[in-house]
Length: 331
Image (spheres, rainbow, N blue to C red):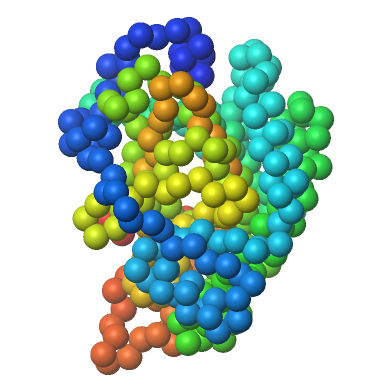
């Protein structure tokens, strides 16, 4: 069954939101407004090492989310990444469909739109493109966009930067737990860590106050490193309220994911977040998920456990974790 694409739906010119996208009342943005005057942590990596460790550990503990600046990725590379992603979504529907994924048969890479399993489940106002960027053994260039021509070169360059930033962040987060800098990276799989790219595309929506681009969720990754376009929409949950994340050009938006919460035994928090949509403008974001290989066993780090600090999470493979999360089975 061919999925109905949200972008095609939006381009068809709708005056009202189709029923399958209308969220339950308590989820609707107009009934769950973000708190005003609270801003998320913003951390410059150019500060002294111990200052950065403390700020990142504090943000990961209190928020599970922070923005980083002075990360060394050139603004022109971020700009090119956004351009090639936008150009893909501007291709004809037919050209995009050549890359259609088939999540039902386990083929997650490619162009997709989330379909529901049942009638009660509501849809999200989003199309996406998903593929692996690392390690080389997982990369299948045949599923990457061939058009625009620069897609592969730009994405490979961005992947190198993501690997570098991941190393930096995992080292800082390890030290923030009082551990050796290498611990978190090796616990997530070392050189076998997988890097996934998901380009999120949220077309203009006729009734954004009734819809969500992405419903409230935590990421099952170790870390998620995201850059958005200039259309706001991301909100994070903090102390019983939604907090809107403002656009900051060239900053990286860092989410602590479930695997890091487990490894840190809850010291770091996997952030609950959602994405709103816009009536006039297309929102896009480029989310890079840093995940362990499927067979990697993840549990609280033994170094953090003692009589006073019992394990709050069980040990299981990432494959088992994913299966449970996808199927909403308690972990």
